[in-house]
Length: 108
Length: 108
DNA sequence: ATTCTTTATCGTAATATTGCAATAAAGCAA
DNA sequence: TTGCTTTATTGCAATATTACGATAAAGAAT
Image (cartoon, rainbow over all chains, first blue to last red; front, top):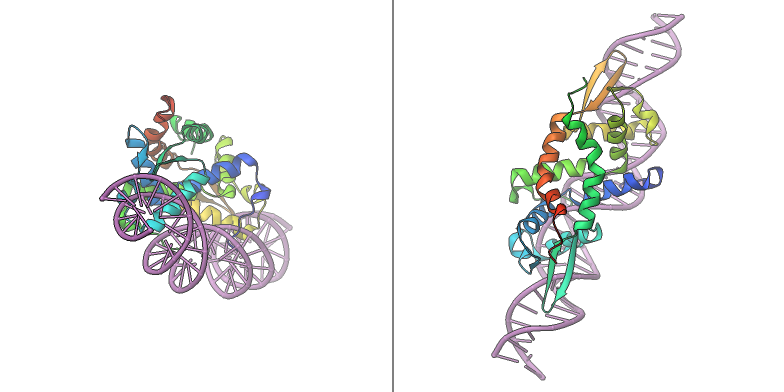
């Protein structure tokens, strides 16, 4: 059907899935990686860095913003984007219990 | 178009996106969390734990297997699933550079 | 005022995803 | 063998996603 049955799952499960889904496209990974390598917020260069049409990049930025993974501030003519650290902290916390298991010996 | 233009992005970016996408559904998050709370591999109870039809659960398990996030071994009548620790290690390593940034003060 | 730059939105087409009923396949139980 | 249990696969319908051209909106530059 294409529609996800969120209602059967916990808020935490839906939240983690939503963040993971937002990161689940190479263009959005590229945007996040680009932002993470810049010391400050990035104004107006994302469209030049991502090899997709401007409309498509804008759409991906919108999704990342909706998921809370990035922030966008209007700065005169252009828009400055940066990582939303608070959301990334939550993302990290949600994955940590599973990542912890990778430090232990394999069970089977 | 629904089709993703992978070829414009690096293998690393595509790999990370693929893992994130595999986790980008609450049912798949629920499956992973269930497996992560069991001490050993889980044989035949996943269908009872996930509130979706058997065919749908099977489909989600297939996607997780394809992404390498879980392993499935035939055990007589049923199939035993467990987390694929090696892939989770890679997943962790790929996210670590971004997660590291959450430990620093916000830039702007 | 007009033009340029930058980003968002709309409309559309192609493809992917989600979900389930029905059915198949493969082993166990009687 | 016959039936039961468990999981996979097929086929289908409904919805979501991806991508882009065209256009709008808003400020900057001339």
